[in-house]
Image 1 (cartoon, rainbow, N blue to C red):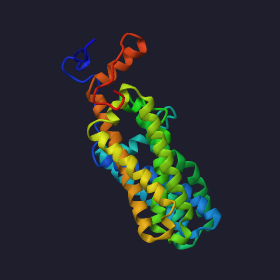
Image 2 (image 1 turned 120 degrees about the vertical axis):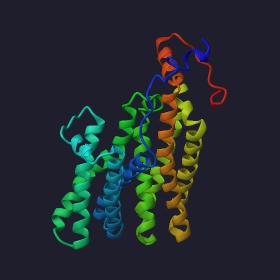
Image 3 (image 1 turned 120 degrees about the horizontal axis):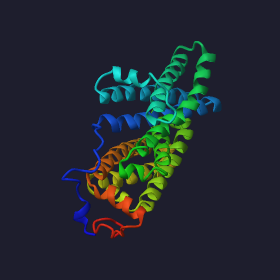
Image 4 (image 1 turned 180 degrees about the vertical axis):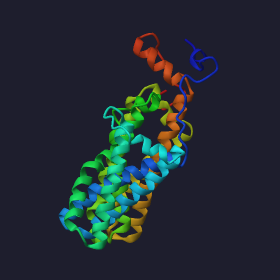
Length: 306
């Protein structure tokens, strides 16, 4: 069967591409992960006596949740739409669970920061910090689950790796912000988090692109391919630099900024790959026919697997 036979469906794509806008959604995905991982880092730093890092992480968690909510509401078009999403809690819907988690997490991070800044209600602040350890991991991973739960081929095909990729990126992002906002002498846990997160994200991305067949092509081609390559280089390079970043402010700044840029490239690249895979019916029809045993596909000459 020739490629031309599955390029269109009556001249139209089989799927409607994601109607998400830049920079709203990619930045929201980044900030949500940053907030979730930072809240966990704040709790760990608080229990281990790294008070400066705990304060910096609490600020990052609150800012990420607050500003991220603003980007999400802007993407929705009308503020009341976010409130409508909270009318029902549906555990089988990643969007519903994510909306409720964002609302709860935002309140908890606000309580954590208010207690830390004012020095009052410390017991309540510590309780909110502990509670945010529950909402934080959900914030860091649910966006990956949300993407995988769609019919978009590049996202749905990567459903096994996306949660690990997003949690690794979130952990690296939180570590990077902690490094940049905490004195070097007290930022060792942040440097460790940045390195571990960078390695996890890179490994998950590597496994994802190697496991996927034709559905993985959008991650290697065009604008998405450039963004994903930039993400891998920046993230892994920044993570490796984090291991020696405690020696100087310059290394700290270079590592933190590289990881942050890599995390943003990941989000923009994921969105672009999803759009490309939805617009080309080849990525929808061919995997279906392969699973049905009715089509053998020769890899695209432009892909790395050709």
